[in-house]
Length: 120
Image 1 (tube, rainbow, N blue to C red):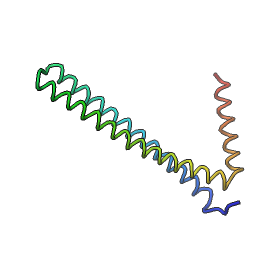
Image 2: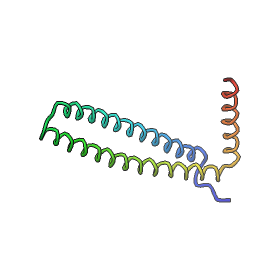
Image 3: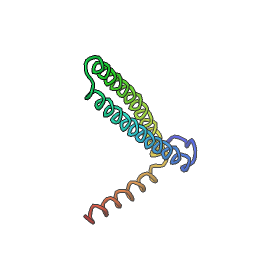
Image 4: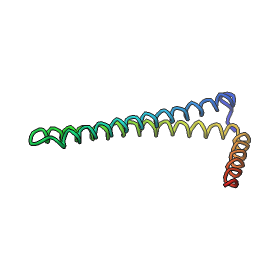
């Protein structure tokens, strides 16, 4: 068996930090998406009353905004995947170092889920 790198509370702290970082990423993605939708609505409203050159300019703005949103989504997706891999690695290490604690936590969570499902 591997030797422990630190104590159990430090390992669970690493997992907690990784999980809270994942929550922050999803909030950032959600905010970016809301901004994107708002920008698109504004551009569509301005394009509705436009004609000729103004319509072409609005179309270019829409394409640029969509390209920017795709880039931002790609960056956020990569960041989220990286954090998920780190969380998985920290969880894997914790389970490897403290298997009985992990089994106990899994049992408690399974029991609680069973109680909640049985209530419905």
